[in-house]
Length: 189
Image (tube, rainbow, N blue to C red):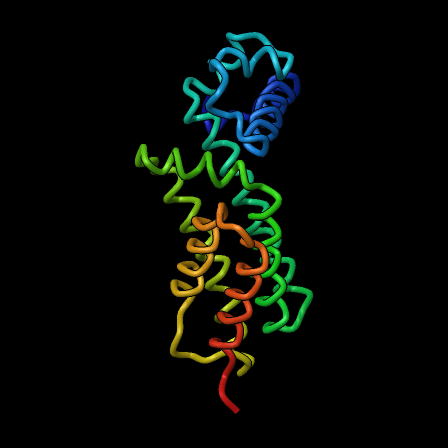
């Protein structure tokens, strides 16, 4: 499969079915519990189809991750286009906590994949940081956010929230961290 040649409709459906099934298994926390060939059966495609699209488990996981990142980046752009800058930033960050909460299995799976040193995960993190940079820059431009803190600090807070997802009371604490971040970013009066 080359990036230049679009997939036939049936091949795209098969690829999408594999990604959707892998996404479900991420959320359930079962991604690493299955034999790789089982993904084909569960998605209703042949084993050859699985290997043609995703030669390894890591390649399949990276495709799921890229889809998640694309969705989050699109959300950041939509919020930036439709809301005042400070509200777009706050809505996005609170939505990230919702996303992490709803997809705890994804966080566990990604933590396992990060140990493999996947370059695709770094690319996704950079794309997400660019989206956050756009939100922060717009809020700085509007005068709602300090100009001496960059998006890297915000990303570090999000990574910390995600890494601590197994803590008791995680959700309330995660919401509190976002409140701290937003309060810390606010331009003093």
